[in-house]
Length: 87
Image (cartoon, rainbow, N blue to C red; front, top):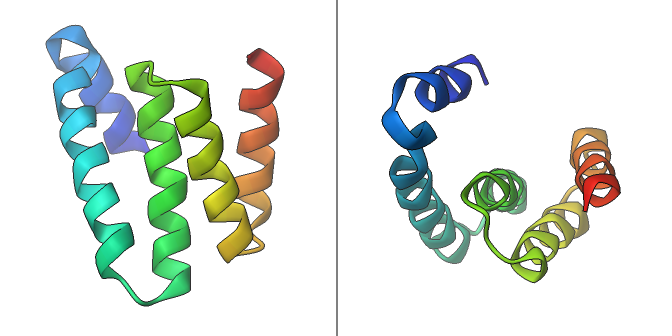
């Protein structure tokens, strides 16, 4: 998380191009991985990237719901609810 913040602060434009690249890699990871825990975390991280790059609400919601459906991780639901309250 600290590295994520450092990139956003240090890179011009908040690192949007890096976040888009990360989102693409996370999408690939979701399709290639067979481990549900790993896939859940990829979906969660993808949702975070999509929020910061300003992607569609539907894509963000889909990423969160995929993560939550694969793994009952309180952090996923908490972050999803916090995002939902801002939208």
